[in-house]
Amino acid sequence: MTIKTRNRIIIFLMFISFALLLGSAIITALDFFTGNFSLPTYIPYKWLQDSVITKFNYIAVISSVFLILLYTSIIYLFINVEFEKTQSTEVIFFSLFLMGCLTESTRLLFPVLNLWNQVNIIPTLCTRAVIFGRVTATVALLLTVICSSPDYRQYVEQNILISVSGAMIIALLLPLNTSVIYPVGLVSWGFGKILRSAMITILIAAVISQYLKSFISTNKTIALATGILMISIGYYFLCATINYLFLGLGFVFLMSGTILYLKTLHRQYLWT
Image (cartoon, rainbow, N blue to C red; front, side, top):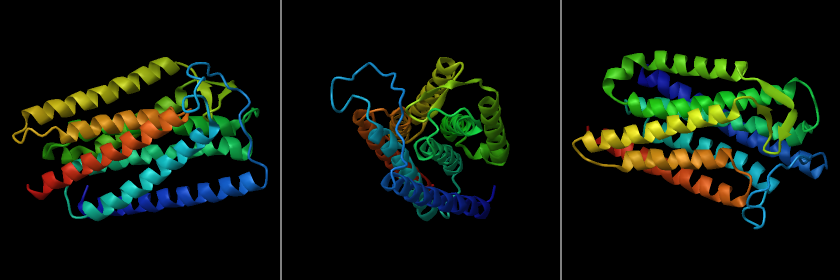
């Protein structure tokens, strides 16, 4: 993939992310002020419900989606400005991670269209979109680490196609239980614990791999590995946000880790 092609794709995704952020904000605000904004009725959470910052709060859930969209838009803009002339394989896969984050916006359709008690195809499609995005984002972080060397540049398109196709197959084949809709805006899916465990394992593998590469490299810097670790923690917390504690921790870790990772990566390519 040439730099010119990569930059065009990133610019396109940047406009998509800004459009999603603006469109979601307008639609949600209109729905809220017209009184059509619906809240979930099924609240299954019993753990950590005694404190204001840890108890379930739907404002925190909605805010997490908007923070993910805001984060994605800002980072796409940052990448477009800072890495415009940099031949970085990591940026390509990190852009894929950001693309996976965009699918979280579909969760806003549940309160906007009042999908909490409806049995139709829309809740199913929204959930499958989120599953696709989360699998894609998780695998993209791993590819950011293991495919960072120049030797992998000729296989970028193949790796992207394989990861996206695999995520799509998982999203389409995973069984869904439409009778249970969680208040985070997701239909209950089968093999949930297995999928979550696999995704966490992939994130751990990405972090460990980056730390090993940092120790082996000549400069001995661990900033890239620390950045990947913080991104993984922040991404997990924001996707699992049900309260203000998860919301705050998720955004702080995700944004701080991304800034640390991308700035370190930029300095690394600046001196090579």
